[in-house]
Length: 211
Image (cartoon, rainbow, N blue to C red):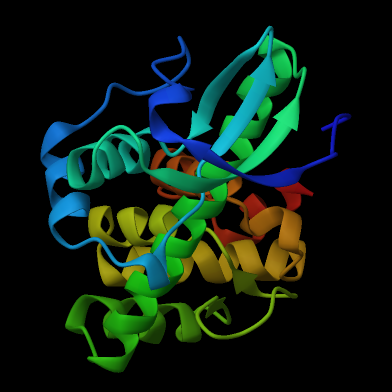
Protein backbone atom coordinates (compact mmCIF):
# COMPACT_ATOMS: atom_id res chain seq x y z
CA UNK A 1 0.00 0.00 0.00
CA UNK A 2 1.17 3.51 -0.74
CA UNK A 3 -0.13 4.94 2.56
CA UNK A 4 1.87 2.98 5.14
CA UNK A 5 1.84 5.49 8.02
CA UNK A 6 0.14 3.71 10.90
CA UNK A 7 -0.38 4.98 14.45
CA UNK A 8 -1.81 3.34 17.55
CA UNK A 9 -4.69 5.12 19.23
CA UNK A 10 -7.23 4.39 21.97
CA UNK A 11 -10.71 5.06 20.61
CA UNK A 12 -14.12 4.86 22.27
CA UNK A 13 -16.02 2.02 20.58
CA UNK A 14 -19.07 4.22 20.09
CA UNK A 15 -17.02 6.26 17.60
CA UNK A 16 -16.03 3.25 15.51
CA UNK A 17 -18.12 2.85 12.36
CA UNK A 18 -18.20 -0.45 10.42
CA UNK A 19 -20.25 -2.27 7.78
CA UNK A 20 -18.28 -0.88 4.84
CA UNK A 21 -19.39 -2.26 1.50
CA UNK A 22 -16.46 -4.69 1.01
CA UNK A 23 -16.83 -6.22 4.49
CA UNK A 24 -18.62 -9.38 5.53
CA UNK A 25 -21.71 -8.93 7.69
CA UNK A 26 -21.19 -8.94 11.45
CA UNK A 27 -21.63 -12.47 12.77
CA UNK A 28 -23.47 -12.09 16.06
CA UNK A 29 -22.83 -15.68 17.16
CA UNK A 30 -19.12 -14.94 16.76
CA UNK A 31 -19.54 -11.59 18.56
CA UNK A 32 -21.16 -13.35 21.54
CA UNK A 33 -18.36 -15.92 21.57
CA UNK A 34 -15.66 -13.22 21.60
CA UNK A 35 -17.47 -11.23 24.30
CA UNK A 36 -18.01 -14.22 26.59
CA UNK A 37 -14.36 -15.29 26.44
CA UNK A 38 -12.82 -11.79 26.27
CA UNK A 39 -9.10 -11.81 27.08
CA UNK A 40 -7.16 -8.54 26.92
CA UNK A 41 -3.96 -10.59 26.65
CA UNK A 42 -5.16 -11.96 23.29
CA UNK A 43 -6.77 -8.73 22.09
CA UNK A 44 -6.39 -8.22 18.34
CA UNK A 45 -6.41 -4.50 17.50
CA UNK A 46 -8.94 -3.43 14.86
CA UNK A 47 -7.63 -1.61 11.77
CA UNK A 48 -9.23 1.82 11.36
CA UNK A 49 -9.19 4.57 8.73
CA UNK A 50 -9.80 8.17 9.91
CA UNK A 51 -11.35 10.19 7.09
CA UNK A 52 -13.83 13.08 6.98
CA UNK A 53 -13.98 13.16 10.78
CA UNK A 54 -15.03 9.50 11.04
CA UNK A 55 -13.27 6.35 12.27
CA UNK A 56 -14.12 3.51 9.88
CA UNK A 57 -13.26 -0.06 10.93
CA UNK A 58 -11.46 -1.80 8.08
CA UNK A 59 -10.81 -5.12 9.83
CA UNK A 60 -12.02 -6.22 13.28
CA UNK A 61 -15.68 -5.23 13.30
CA UNK A 62 -16.64 -8.37 15.25
CA UNK A 63 -14.10 -7.38 17.91
CA UNK A 64 -15.58 -3.87 18.13
CA UNK A 65 -19.11 -5.26 18.44
CA UNK A 66 -17.96 -7.70 21.13
CA UNK A 67 -16.31 -4.88 23.12
CA UNK A 68 -19.58 -2.93 23.03
CA UNK A 69 -21.48 -6.01 24.18
CA UNK A 70 -19.00 -6.81 26.95
CA UNK A 71 -18.16 -3.35 28.30
CA UNK A 72 -20.69 -0.87 26.89
CA UNK A 73 -20.27 1.97 24.43
CA UNK A 74 -17.90 4.09 26.55
CA UNK A 75 -15.04 1.61 26.65
CA UNK A 76 -11.87 2.58 24.77
CA UNK A 77 -9.87 0.04 22.79
CA UNK A 78 -6.49 0.33 21.11
CA UNK A 79 -6.66 0.48 17.31
CA UNK A 80 -4.25 0.59 14.38
CA UNK A 81 -5.13 3.83 12.60
CA UNK A 82 -4.31 5.17 9.16
CA UNK A 83 -5.48 8.56 7.90
CA UNK A 84 -7.26 9.56 4.70
CA UNK A 85 -7.11 6.23 2.90
CA UNK A 86 -9.19 6.11 -0.26
CA UNK A 87 -11.87 3.42 -0.59
CA UNK A 88 -9.49 1.47 -2.82
CA UNK A 89 -6.71 1.69 -0.21
CA UNK A 90 -9.16 0.66 2.52
CA UNK A 91 -10.11 -2.40 0.52
CA UNK A 92 -6.46 -3.32 -0.05
CA UNK A 93 -5.69 -3.00 3.65
CA UNK A 94 -8.72 -5.15 4.46
CA UNK A 95 -7.52 -7.85 2.04
CA UNK A 96 -3.99 -7.74 3.46
CA UNK A 97 -5.15 -8.11 7.06
CA UNK A 98 -7.70 -10.81 6.25
CA UNK A 99 -5.08 -12.80 4.34
CA UNK A 100 -2.67 -12.61 7.30
CA UNK A 101 -5.34 -13.97 9.63
CA UNK A 102 -6.30 -16.76 7.25
CA UNK A 103 -2.65 -17.73 6.98
CA UNK A 104 -2.17 -17.67 10.75
CA UNK A 105 -5.32 -19.74 11.31
CA UNK A 106 -4.23 -22.35 8.77
CA UNK A 107 -0.70 -22.55 10.19
CA UNK A 108 -2.07 -23.12 13.69
CA UNK A 109 -4.60 -25.67 12.50
CA UNK A 110 -2.13 -27.75 10.50
CA UNK A 111 0.55 -27.66 13.18
CA UNK A 112 -2.04 -29.09 15.58
CA UNK A 113 -2.99 -31.77 13.03
CA UNK A 114 0.66 -32.71 12.61
CA UNK A 115 1.25 -32.96 16.35
CA UNK A 116 -1.84 -35.13 16.77
CA UNK A 117 -0.79 -37.29 13.79
CA UNK A 118 -4.06 -36.69 11.94
CA UNK A 119 -4.46 -39.75 9.63
CA UNK A 120 -5.47 -37.78 6.51
CA UNK A 121 -2.63 -35.30 6.93
CA UNK A 122 -0.06 -38.03 7.60
CA UNK A 123 -1.22 -39.87 4.45
CA UNK A 124 -0.93 -36.67 2.39
CA UNK A 125 2.59 -36.06 3.70
CA UNK A 126 3.58 -39.66 2.91
CA UNK A 127 2.19 -39.53 -0.65
CA UNK A 128 3.89 -36.19 -1.33
CA UNK A 129 7.17 -37.64 -0.08
CA UNK A 130 6.82 -40.44 -2.64
CA UNK A 131 6.31 -37.75 -5.28
CA UNK A 132 9.46 -35.93 -4.09
CA UNK A 133 7.59 -33.02 -2.53
CA UNK A 134 7.22 -31.62 1.00
CA UNK A 135 4.28 -29.99 2.76
CA UNK A 136 5.09 -26.61 4.33
CA UNK A 137 4.43 -27.13 8.02
CA UNK A 138 7.10 -25.80 10.40
CA UNK A 139 9.59 -25.41 7.54
CA UNK A 140 10.55 -22.42 5.33
CA UNK A 141 9.51 -21.93 1.72
CA UNK A 142 11.81 -23.40 -0.87
CA UNK A 143 12.30 -25.83 -3.72
CA UNK A 144 9.86 -28.77 -3.67
CA UNK A 145 7.94 -27.24 -0.73
CA UNK A 146 4.16 -26.85 -1.16
CA UNK A 147 2.77 -23.80 0.63
CA UNK A 148 -0.77 -24.16 -0.78
CA UNK A 149 -1.75 -26.72 1.84
CA UNK A 150 -5.53 -26.50 1.50
CA UNK A 151 -5.37 -26.79 -2.30
CA UNK A 152 -3.17 -29.90 -2.30
CA UNK A 153 -5.27 -31.40 0.51
CA UNK A 154 -8.44 -31.03 -1.59
CA UNK A 155 -6.72 -32.55 -4.64
CA UNK A 156 -5.47 -35.47 -2.53
CA UNK A 157 -9.02 -36.21 -1.42
CA UNK A 158 -10.26 -36.20 -5.02
CA UNK A 159 -7.57 -38.48 -6.55
CA UNK A 160 -6.65 -42.07 -5.81
CA UNK A 161 -3.22 -42.59 -4.24
CA UNK A 162 -1.49 -43.99 -7.33
CA UNK A 163 -2.66 -41.21 -9.64
CA UNK A 164 -1.88 -38.54 -7.05
CA UNK A 165 1.70 -39.71 -6.57
CA UNK A 166 2.23 -40.15 -10.32
CA UNK A 167 0.71 -36.73 -11.13
CA UNK A 168 2.81 -34.77 -8.69
CA UNK A 169 6.00 -36.74 -9.28
CA UNK A 170 5.53 -35.72 -12.91
CA UNK A 171 5.05 -32.10 -11.81
CA UNK A 172 8.20 -32.23 -9.66
CA UNK A 173 10.29 -33.81 -12.42
CA UNK A 174 9.02 -31.46 -15.14
CA UNK A 175 9.55 -28.20 -13.26
CA UNK A 176 12.31 -29.45 -10.97
CA UNK A 177 10.35 -28.47 -7.85
CA UNK A 178 10.32 -24.74 -8.71
CA UNK A 179 8.18 -22.79 -6.22
CA UNK A 180 6.13 -21.16 -8.99
CA UNK A 181 4.94 -24.61 -10.09
CA UNK A 182 3.69 -25.37 -6.56
CA UNK A 183 1.20 -22.54 -6.18
CA UNK A 184 -2.49 -23.39 -5.81
CA UNK A 185 -3.68 -22.53 -9.38
CA UNK A 186 -0.78 -24.50 -10.88
CA UNK A 187 -1.47 -27.52 -8.64
CA UNK A 188 -5.14 -27.55 -9.56
CA UNK A 189 -4.31 -27.10 -13.24
CA UNK A 190 -1.86 -30.00 -13.13
CA UNK A 191 -4.41 -32.33 -11.54
CA UNK A 192 -6.96 -31.45 -14.25
CA UNK A 193 -4.35 -31.87 -16.98
CA UNK A 194 -3.35 -35.28 -15.62
CA UNK A 195 -6.96 -36.39 -15.27
CA UNK A 196 -7.75 -35.34 -18.86
CA UNK A 197 -4.68 -36.51 -20.77
CA UNK A 198 -2.72 -39.10 -18.85
CA UNK A 199 -4.62 -42.08 -20.28
CA UNK A 200 -3.71 -40.93 -23.80
CA UNK A 201 0.01 -40.21 -23.36
CA UNK A 202 3.00 -41.70 -21.64
CA UNK A 203 4.67 -39.66 -18.88
CA UNK A 204 7.57 -38.96 -21.24
CA UNK A 205 5.29 -37.48 -23.88
CA UNK A 206 3.46 -35.38 -21.31
CA UNK A 207 6.77 -34.00 -20.03
CA UNK A 208 7.86 -33.11 -23.56
CA UNK A 209 4.53 -31.47 -24.40
CA UNK A 210 4.58 -29.34 -21.22
CA UNK A 211 8.20 -28.24 -21.66
